[in-house]
Amino acid sequence: MKANHNISQDRIERLEEIGFQWQCVDHDEAFEKRCRELISFKEEFGHCNVPVKYLGKWCDSSMRTAYKQIQKGMKTDRNISQDRIERLEEIGFQWQDVDYDEAFEKRCRELISFKEEFGHCNVPVKYLGKWCYSMITAYKKIQKGMKPDRNLSQDRMKRLEEIGFQWQRVEVFEKRCRELIAFKKEFGHCNVPQRYADNPSLGQWCNNMRTAYKKIQKGMQATRNLSQDRIERLEEIGFQRNYKNAKMLHACATTNYYMCDGSL
Image (cartoon, rainbow, N blue to C red; front, side, top):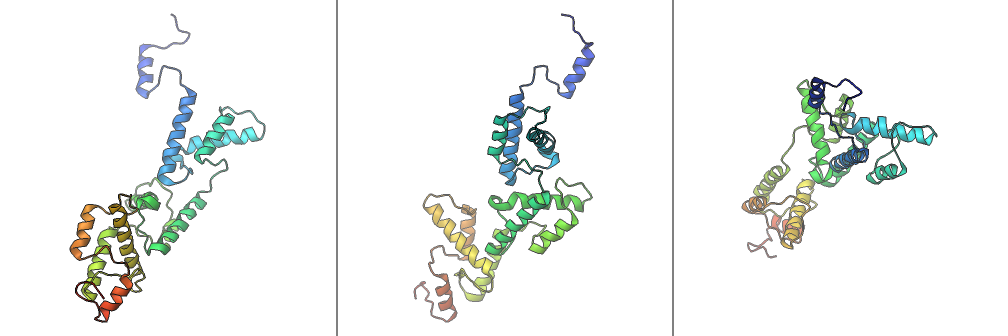
């Protein structure tokens, strides 16, 4: 058939180079694709406050703008039906413009809570680990004179540093092992009390290791990364996994009432 528009072979090839598709786009599928991307973002970062570099333009310029127009009784050029509104709300999408400073502060408060509980800011991936890693990555790019993917201003850097955030990732497990070795050199054993005044983080960590080991023995999923290599590393140091009252054992050891066989 004769086309209504001048579309030569050169033009066809030009469009295909760009990635143009000749089949009509299924807008429902396009919407669902964006929703899946939004879900993936939320799974990684824990929220739907998407930066412009990712889905930000679609979230803000398209969905939020269209929603506001609908709320004002205006006609929108975007297809945002009630079903789509409910779909986005199920994911956790917010219709109000996102205050990214507040999102950053929320993460900082979570980081502070983690530090208060564990005594450090070396956050596992399960908690804020991915967000912390993104901050470190942005920081490194800034140090190299590159443009970071994240908004990491000088004020935000100072805020994180005040909390105790470290820009270099520390291998927490090995750090704790070194502290455990130092403890053993001083006291002759690895029975660190959970509330060890000189190093509360070490006591809590030892307790976490024992808890993780017990779960593994019961066939449960441990909340801590305790691989076989790590178990062997601890055993080499002399760590014992079954002490029920490390505080009492430590107190007895320091007063020479601790017997060689571990009894009192």
